[in-house]
Image 1 (cartoon, rainbow, N blue to C red):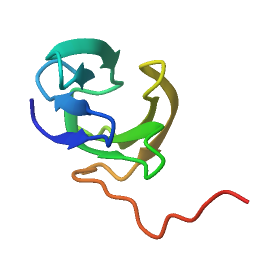
Image 2: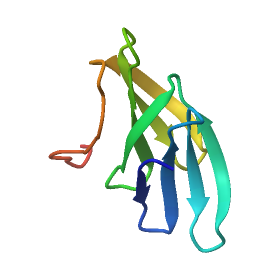
Image 3: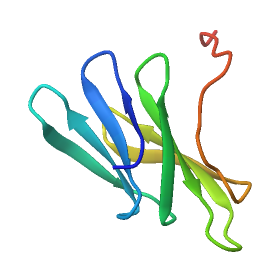
Length: 101
């Protein structure tokens, strides 16, 4: 495990840097409920959206590869979107999140 975030309802989302994936765990039982493959090797940061529906994972690019931000639906444990970014996509955080209107 490289980096982690915890949801209000007791799920832990962790990046698996050496395994090119992210895991979702139920903290109460210690059970891994999902393992989400990531598009590149160097999984790094993770943050959970304020509504607790999504996790965003930053993945560093290696050599000439771009970095990637992956959006995971926490209800299904599946990737729903990704976008390439600058090569060294290290940590990640959300800023100024407002409710959908």
